[in-house]
Amino acid sequence: MGQTIEITAPDGVADAYVTGEPGKPGVLLYVDAIGLRPRIEEMADRIAAWGYVVLAPHVFYRDGRAADLAPKADLRDPGAREAFFGGGVMERVGALTPELSTADAVAWVAELEQHAGDGPIGVTGYCMGARLAVRTAGQFPGTVAAVGGFHGGRLVTDAPDSPHLAIAGSTAEYVFGHADQDSSMPIEQVEALEQVLTDAGRPHVNEIYEGAAHGYSMADTSVYDEAGTERHFAALQGLLARTL
Image (tube, rainbow, N blue to C red; front, side, top):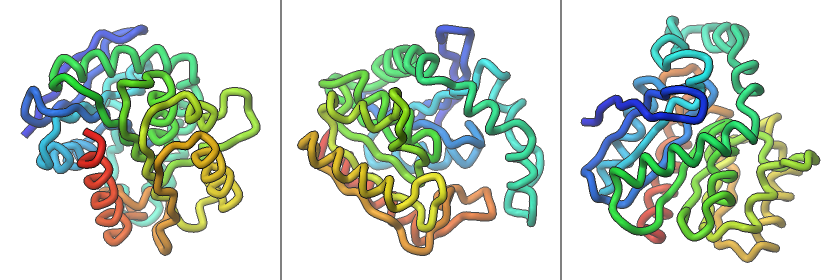
């Protein structure tokens, strides 16, 4: 349905997946820590089928092409997901600092706007991609009208560059679907995020998906949860329909 393209980014050329009818409202999809791969393309295609053009950039382009960094094993097999994450994945995530991702977002949004019609865009992110989505909304007020964040981690921290600080300057509506019993996004952080959204006056849904583990939307891994995944797609579809 879609195609792989190349984007000139601040520190090199990034491959990306774009899908959907050109001229439709645009949606930027931020990948999880596993990266750009067929499962992400499937998700982008499903969102595009609702009437959008979707861009999923390879945010780890500084470390190599998407195909080179993608898992070689089946992450649904026992222990395979854990082994993959033990092979340098979190080092890549940590190296993608807010400074770098902010610079990259300029390229991602500009590329999406080349394919999409005029008007606001939506951003959705998974795992670490939820943090990128929140930051992008704060970076592009008036452009980003919708933010989806699903099984995101560390959205609220004590750091001076915590993702949640971007919410106050944004103009987006937010939908968060948190993983249940997620050590990277405990209930205290979910409650703090709720307060931030309320204080900023942003329309939002901020929920925990009971029984859905961190990474629940990724059907190519052992933590996939069908109920949580379908719930997230329904919530995202409603958000985009309301805002775009």
